[in-house]
Length: 119
Image (cartoon, rainbow, N blue to C red; front, top):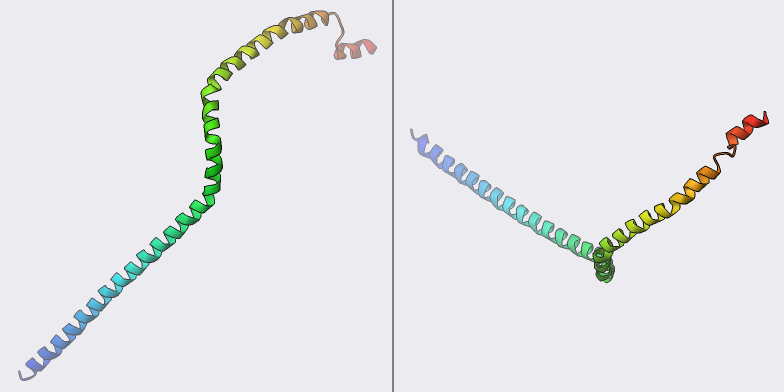
């Protein structure tokens, strides 16, 4: 029984050591997480700056064309209607010419028929 207080004292010392080790591990994990977050934020800011520099010139050039593109987009339906009208009128104006060519060539031997007649 005399050894019981001695064992109890050693257990308390060991328990305090374990608590201190746990506290150190928690503070180390917190410090590592903070360092990781800081590095991540720094890298993200550097990436954002690099992307901004990379795309700045392109965005500036696009902004020069943007008002002109807006006007073209607004006028596009008008040009599409005109294009369809021109296509239809061109087809109709070409139709009699094609018909005349077919009729005029009906009596003429084609290349295949010329070969047959030559033999």
